[in-house]
Length: 217
Ligand SMILES: [Zn+2]
Image (tube, rainbow, N blue to C red; front, side, top):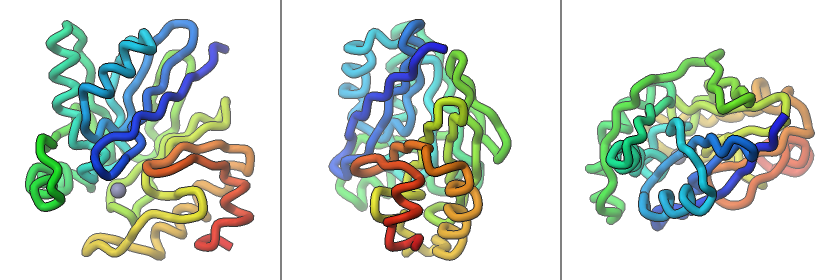
């Protein structure tokens, strides 16, 4: 099996970890959580000589989705048609308010977005030989999904779980108990050896968080 290369591109003033996942041999790639700063995402794509086949979104917050429509349009202008996939449809209300939220946060240029395809728990997203299972992990947002590649023990967890912390739930639509339940019942059982990248800051492993994360112990 080819290797999966992971390049983190912090975007927006919120420093959200947009991720470029590239199959080492074929250069096939996806961009996860294209939150903004599209020129920087495209520069990373070009530097990696990556051929982007899709844009995947973990949840509807502006710093994760605000650049997706612009990235799709920029790739289309190069003759590359890519679908925007995810999150779960329950985040649609957030993705319809990105422009309004961007103004409120003082981040211009972000765009509302409607994905080409919503995902649901149990879906499987493919990148070459890599297969990412979709897990619905609400609480931070109602439609948040986590993407898990079990064969190579790797996950993209968005804003569900961080190194030493968990996602905020102090929104009108937040649900703290649901967030912790999702982490404990869906993520931790996947195994201590699963390495993950997250929406902000450094990644970690599920084992390190199970043992040391103060929100979980
Ligand atoms: Zn978020």
